[in-house]
Length: 388
Length: 233
Ligand SMILES: Nc1ncnc2c1ncn2[C@@H]1O[C@H](COP(=O)(O)OP(=O)(O)O)[C@@H](O)[C@H]1O
Ligand SMILES: [Mg+2]
Image 1 (cartoon, rainbow over the protein chains, first blue to last red):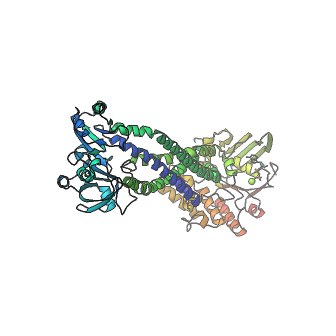
Image 2 (tube, chains in turn red, cyan):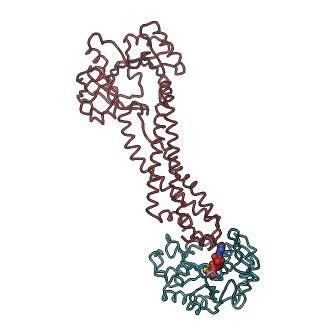
Image 3 (cartoon, rainbow over the protein chains, first blue to last red):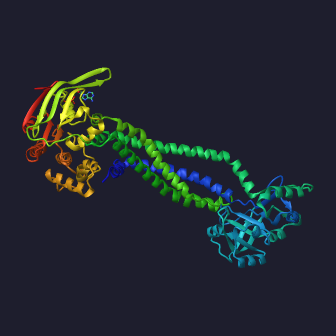
């Protein structure tokens, strides 16, 4: 038995109050973990965004298309190693009309060369290239829809009306956290050949992999300059630059998240402080007894701080226990499955858990500091006389 | 603490108060409770302190116990001048020489009987096993060896007070102070507590100062002192 072990037992003296505090703080800790994870998960996209990949789109809008012949011009720009293109298909699986996933018609020869972080078994890739109606799908999407290799899949077009038939030739896996694992990738030829002549040979955007990432700015400008004299002009940017500009647009949101995080920490501190202060007030006479027995003011302070630390630790652990199923498995899973295009990797960082737990303990001790100091300053007779 | 200390012998004054004044300040008002009190308690005595409420009994007891310092005059206990000690020295003095018995027992509800008794020994360097052994011996002295692992709320008032007495004697104190130790108890439990105090006095040679309102309790002491308006009669 030590004073510290007695302090830990003291936490549960008023069970109902302790339980309500622990639950309240646990919810606050979970909210904190959730907000931090939004920020860390968004940062993953930027951290892993390729600087050696330049995207080129219509200068006016993303939704406007480019002539297919433009790809040859891009491929001829010095510094470009390999270039590909893609069209947004925007189809839905009719049995799951509310589940969003990215579906794209791509150039089968070059697409996966530009996206080396999407890994496909060579045999599957070879089969897919020969199969005009073949598709390569992400593992998360395949799991969600229950698709397996060889399955026949029908998607309903939204931009290109009608039912479209595919065969799943392979599943791609991510070798990097930034990869959206819910994409549906199929042949550009299949789409293009099905269109009326007037709509053919249009592409959504182009992607070039360059040799020297430090030249991404110059190469982007060179690509756009090549189309300056054409009727349709372009805007090019590296993926990193695109993500950074996206993060820039989001900076207001991030500031708001930081402010809310602080508010949550404040609530957490108040909850803990209130509980500790009530406990200290009720136990003042006990501190008087301890002092009468020969314990010193520093023992009383330590006793109260230990109790506060234990309360914070219990509450922090409860918060982590709550965060895992709610944030990681609930929200995180949903986001990865449904918002994979923007946030492909929504997992709690260990550092976030450590931070949340430490803050719960530290704030509890901070909140206890004043009551503890006050209690230790009482004279023995004052403390003993403090009846209820 | 390193105050010179010699084992007192029976009959030596263990407590000596010389012209003790105690004044409380309440805002702008001064309340002098003890005004030049002279008083001695011989080693081995069992003293009962009676008197009306507010007459200063607890104030006197607190001075003897080293919980408070006199405004003027000297309080000498077991050779120590308590008024001259700082807070840390007083705390060490209490841990070494004092055993406290309160009216409302003041046990820690989260601790078992044995743990409550062990509590004062946390201030010593005794190893855990030795502390537990001593707590058990003290509980045996008060006749609660079969309630060792009970929590205070599982005990009767009389039993709680006996645990408190075990806690008071576990450090083998020089002097026991008890402020209305039977005030919350029925006659039968009170008598059992008084039997125990008498036994601690006669068998274990403990000097005891007990404040009480109860004439039957006072009867059990070897000396009865009456206090009125801060004056002993
Ligand atoms: N810490 C204190 N501050 C102010 N007044 C006090 C304090 N302690 C005791 N008193 C006053 O001193 C007087 C004597 O109190 P006390 O010694 O407790 O009396 P008793 O124990 O005989 O009933 C009372 O009037 C009480 O209100
Ligand atoms: Mg009193």
